[in-house]
Image (cartoon, rainbow, N blue to C red):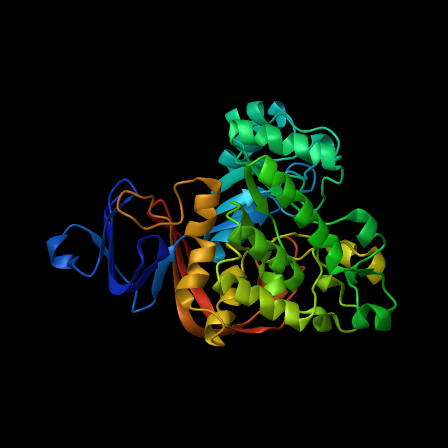
Length: 428
């Protein structure tokens, strides 16, 4: 491969505290050779010159929560279509969920998923295994064996370990061997038969509600256990301001853990559900506008560490049902960054903070060498136009499923190019 130099770029790399005009030099092995304002194309006469035209260059996005349908649900998504959607969204590293069919909870399934991903995917894949066998919430998976095979973390995805004794054993063992635990936070007794936020909208629509307490109580339980068993613990997604209060209190006490939030909960609220829009049936549910605003503030203050797409492809038949029976989830990996940029345009968040939650923060939590443009790093790069307007059309999305929660939404900010290992893998 030939050396490349990206010129006339605004480079934003939170891992280096960088926001400056300059160039990026990529060596012939697909690594960052040099970066900044002192690189001159005249000093690199053999390099291929790519004019970025004053657009923004950031590290490739690291998405900590996305579903790929292989094996078992290829009709929803597969490695090829997930890769296409991710790269179109500037996402170069994806943490995949284990709720496939069969579930990824044993060594043979890990071997299969890694081999299959290597052959079919064109992004960096970091697979998770289930926290408990068969995602049953009863018996913990073989953390040590599965980690040795390449598993990045353990999660039961949209299910929660309800039994406190089981969760204590999981965290105790995880603290001994250093694996990452990623918990969905929901008390089943308190969320039973619910499908949207408990409140005025659920009452008006005649739908079962899910109280914020169902989320808050599991966070309080797990953080109490974390105080006794200090493992690598991550709250997958939060949705309410009351949960933030618990997180703030525990972080101020010095407890070490990380927190994620879905882009859906940052950009939508329960009123967007309107008259039973099933594409907005999500887990955790969309809550009040006050909650959405509090979550944005939680990112600003550092209480929330990462933004995830929570990319959950669902076939059309799964959504074209009465709200209570409809499947949960929305695709979002392709629109993750453009939707997050809304918070910059409406002056809710600094641009560098948004980029930080999508790049270096998830990389640090996962302990992977991604999310940075430091010298020697893989040249995984996203180039975007901060101001280009466009409108979301589900039929144009590259995901195999078209269940976007923001159909018809007007966005400002568009991915122009994505590099993986120094090679251009997407160009708009």
